[in-house]
Amino acid sequence: MSGGLRALIETRANGRCEYCMAPVAICAYTFHIEHCIPRSAGGSSDASNLALACAACNLRKSTHTSALDPETNNKVALFHPVKEKWANHFQLKGTLIIGRTSTGRATAAFLQLNSPRRRAARAAWLATGLWP
Image (cartoon, rainbow, N blue to C red; front, side, top):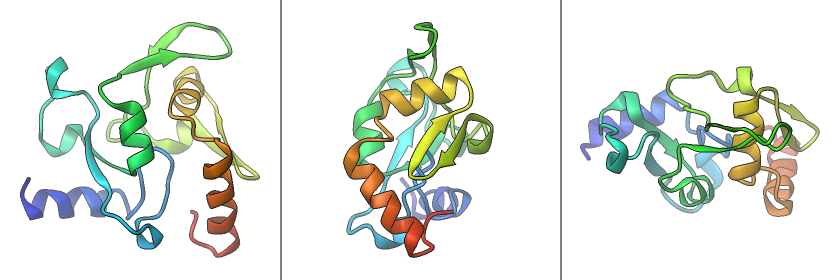
């Protein structure tokens, strides 16, 4: 991947994981460039299908594009951070990321956005002003 494409994606993401909003600035590793729709499913490698993702989100998502909404038990598409707005699908309540929609609920559950470690990290980011 070209440095220019990576820079474009990092800038668009405002230096945050586009799924959990983890800030790049305090993580001790380079965030992944993730295919929202995997190449194996016909996804492209252009900016419209690439998202900045922390290791936890990218490794958990892998090649998945859908998951079960825990409220309805229906299979729904996972959040596509390039095509959809985070705030339309999620809200922060304390240190919890709450799904506002079936896509938000399925994504939060599937990517384990509210695991104890993530909530602890989010509490620190909130306390220091590093979480949006």
